[in-house]
Length: 199
Image (cartoon, rainbow, N blue to C red; front, side, top):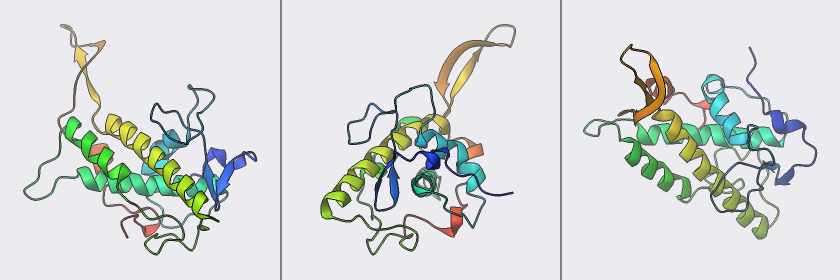
């Protein structure tokens, strides 16, 4: 079974920095990302979250377009986020609020860009052509990382359904889960393509 590729590879109008796509996203966070036209359609962040668990089982991935490079980067960032919220000896799993703060900080922490010595995928990515392009890519990736962190915390800590007296869900949502979802955390040690952004 082959790995899943981005549905945005086929869009010829996509702007690129180096050879990485700069795609529209749904967000209320400030930044340079173009806003997606239809809020009901999935964006690249939804795609990364939806494909993460299937794709991280693969050690090989054939890049079919510039959107695949952004997808790879976001999947590797999700792995980094899961590592951040994983329990460790003497450190229990963080609460929903603490995980949100930790991932928001991780999203804006300094990170390597394609072409930098610490970037783990330099063989597959072209460096930005100029300092201005590098600054634009850093701003875009910071914004997408921040938006992804927000959406990931929502999935990691789903709201519990309120049950009625008959034991059936009422349609109302209760408090957030106390610990991150085991269905996500079970993928914490898996490395998509055997790589990590924390090189």
